Length: 230
Ligand code: TYD
Image (tube, rainbow, N blue to C red; front, top):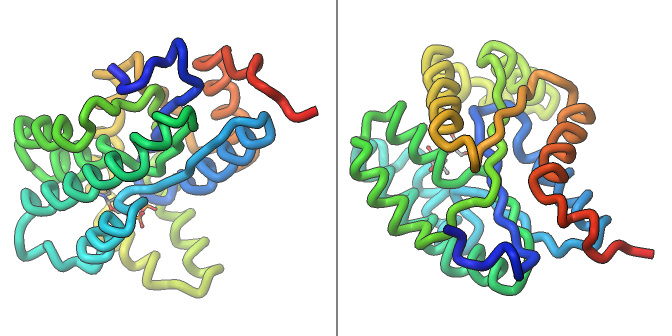
């Protein structure tokens, strides 16, 4: 029930989901570049964020400010940011025939605040319906990884980047939390087999990019016939 006609419009809406340290943002960038090489117009975004108002909500949330308000309020804030992001960026881009690739979207609220955080499903459903306004992704790629490997990756990268605080953040939320996140994303994939594809992120970056490209081409065979640069 996309808000644009996939038969007549080249627009496609793809989201990337998964736990932390699975390499989503790198893969979003790589896919955007590859589509760009084919001559496809791509808009890359992320959540929370993507528009000035949603980025403001992002800094408020990620600074830990809503913690004292409780996880329900946090779910509402993520949805408010998403509503602005959909209205101001995603819907207009799709309406003008562009592809939108988004690093995290509504499944993250369902997993972090809902399945893991305990916000009841009815509220998550209502917030999702409000924020998406019919803009259900055409494809959601869930990058799946054993949390112990993900932790090792986050730790290594944080040390290389001279940002040990990042490793601390991951460690603060214990492995059990990350296992529950993983189970949550896998449950969403099982419930939405037409929309979601789960890929193991345990392979190296190049191999994973190839795997994502294979899935995207299989899912959107019309891609091959689109204008290609000479
Ligand atoms: P970010 O730094 O973008 O993390 P990552 O690289 O893992 O995507 O921070 C986003 C954090 O916000 C991440 O911990 C997941 C969380 N989040 C939610 O809890 N609910 C949501 O709806 C979204 C979009 C993100």
